[in-house]
Image (cartoon, rainbow, N blue to C red; front, side, top):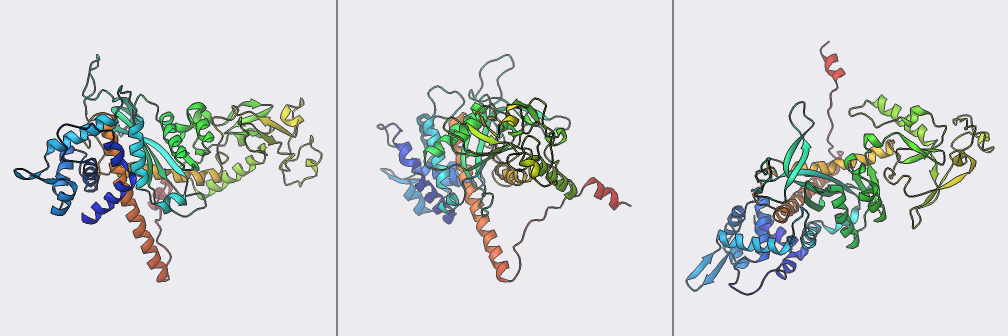
Length: 495
């Protein structure tokens, strides 16, 4: 506990949150025994011990400290009548003063700017410099957080948590794809390794709690904007189809303006051919030759559990599809425009329209151009406006092998939520926090993920030390082997 307290104190001190909040609290009146620093340390220790996010548990964590720490943090102070130990009512008073100082004057289901600044500072302080310098890539997702309040009556009316609202989450019941819940959406940005970089601990760098009536991807753009404005460069941003399917103005366009490289799983409604531009076929975030075989344009992502043979076939087809792509030959200008080059002019195809292309090897595919040459065939290159591929354009061709391997890093954010809702430690399900409103829940959620980051750092250091011992003994580092049995394996084992 002593070592944990020192580490959490160091993280909290680096954040500078205490001074920021103390400046917002009212002055005058009866002095508070509990400072903001001691309150947050109690919240962090409460989560480090795996206790629920209850103020009574924060009080227990503080009075459970050693005598010297209690005196240093003001848990026990000298009064006229003698030593006075901190009471639960004093913890409650300080916490509600902090909430009142950080909450929105008119609640709308989103955190206020001061609250966002506090949460960003806390999480950033829990990320060591060597990790922050090792990667700029993040994986983003959102999960449900059910309010402790009962929902309002069906005919309307008030409830204990007016900022919460109805949302949908995946259902565990057979035959049901989703289910309703009353509460909030919790979004997180987890750090992942660069595509060709070293492995890094999967730390939560940013967090956002919003009511369910607020669109999580659109709201999280503001979090990423604050990151960039704070001097933190943004690299690869990995997200699932729930983010990719948003209108470009709410997700893709703002992220590109921030310098992010988007890597997403396209929504089924956005896959395949989606019209033309200048005669070129718009498909999966790219432009393709009008003579591209339809079977290649219909290529979708690999099914889960695909065999090696299926993967090899899929990779061959995606590589063949890349031959028909109009390749980018310029970066985006200030207005988002760029130029692309005909694949035959680039030497990837044989085409009668390009005499030099017909001199290429017979191993390259040959196309038959349309009778009426569209602009993409009549010109060697053409300019593409920003709105043509605004929604679906991304770093790698979809669904190529490079995209599949890069997108696989996104599972880090799923592990983030699975550890936060682990019943063996911090079970972040209904009842974990009995406080109401975005501000109170956000402060405890930030405390939980700060503690989680410390656990991940310890586990990462232990694994690195074990790998070094194995290397010193002449053994290879221990890796986890995925054991997956297919239906065919089970059928064959019984014969």
